[in-house]
Image 1 (cartoon, rainbow, N blue to C red):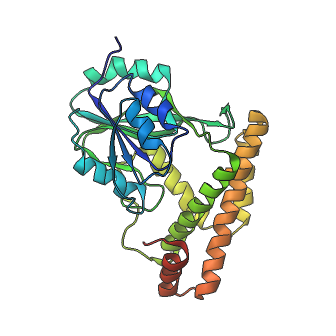
Image 2 (cartoon, rainbow, N blue to C red):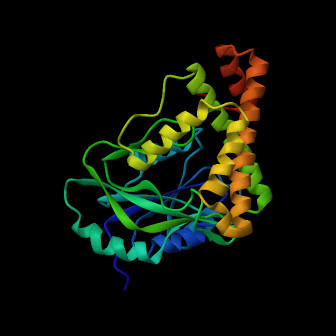
Amino acid sequence: MEKKLPVAVIILTKDEERHIERCVRNVLQVSDEVYVVDSESTDRTCEIAERFGATVVEHPWPGNQAEQFNWALDNLPVRAEWILRLDADEYLLPELVEELREKLPAMPEDVSALSLSRARCFCGRVLRHGIVNNIRIVRIFRKGKARYERRIMDEHLTILDGRTVEMKHQFIDDNRLPLGEFITKHNQYASREAALLLDAEYGLSDHVAQAGGHGAEVERKRAQKARYARMPLFWRAFAYFIYRYIVKLGFLDGREGFLWDFLQGWWYRTLVDAKVLEIKRKSGEDREKIIEILSREYGIKL
């Protein structure tokens, strides 16, 4: 019989029937407390999750993942000492499962969170180069010791107290969306990314990324994004692609590596900049008009 750990798993979903069975079956190796918090899916996500042993709780989408996950923390009847957050298209690799079984039960009391390394699979190939492999994210934490910062995108857990320990092995992001749906999804991401850049430039909201408590990798990436935001529109998207594909050896991942760095790097970042430019021109760079356009045309409330 598989050894269960004192960890509850929380998975946020919206139309994830392609991925949810794989995710739930994977985490049931380590947990007997798996929650799927669903945002009014129109497909078979909830049915599949319940069939394979998850507890499904429906809650309307509040506008961003941070608020949805914090709602889950406040309202789910979690019994376990630890909480693992996963997306439906992610799963734990066998080596990480064994590492958690070995280390989690004996974790010192002053440890409040575990930093996991994330691998990336795109178009059926695990990417080994570029900037996508071995990105560290806090995904496991003691109940009551962490909350998500308030952001419309690129949100991370804030550890309230205690220290964070790094796990050696990886979980993997393996999204199986057709490329058409990948494009549609990234078009939506681009609107939120543009809003964040405009917020940083014009001070549109009263919430900014909280300093500290996210781990060194997140803080490093945020510093890089701040430098990126000061670069000229469009040129920065091209430079980012060259950095990923040439400097960081993304070309060694073959056609899949090219597609990933082109689509998620150059194309996506160019689309973000196009939206920034469009909103600036429509608003005349007036702060109140930018807020109005984001709300009316993009459905984004800062």
